[in-house]
Length: 151
Figure 1 (cartoon, rainbow, N blue to C red):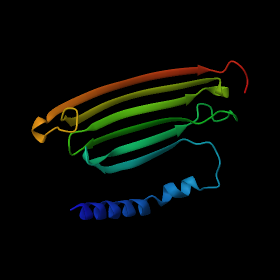
Figure 2 (figure 1 turned 180 degrees about the horizontal axis):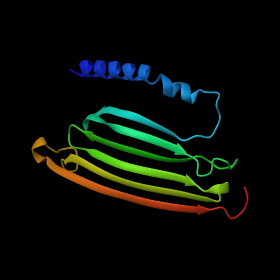
Figure 3 (figure 1 turned 90 degrees about the vertical axis):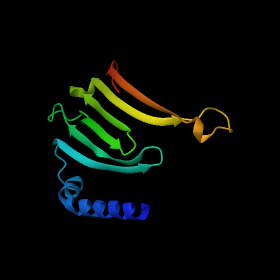
Figure 4 (figure 1 turned 180 degrees about the vertical axis):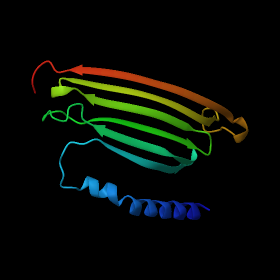
């Protein structure tokens, strides 16, 4: 069964890769102009604890001021996935640079939903001691940096 799932995922990935020729050309293009870009990426995985994981991730890159020659690229990235064993995550992170790179803002918000079994402590635990637990976590983070000296 695992071989069939791996083969199926490999076939899907190869079909998806051939369909993304425009994106690949965009990355290796000689055009170095500053432009906004969005890159969606499917997410597939398998772990013993979570089972088969499927979802999507995306990255949006942009410039606050395209005419500023020293400004760094800002970005917003997000991820959302769920699994066959009930685990899930939804998250977003923003990394934003102001004109002249004098201010740097970082914002993050995530929600985790993790199911797991606790069997007790020690090396003599039994399967009958299984205690299913559900953990839901939220994470919020904000950072602001200000350049006080050049370089």
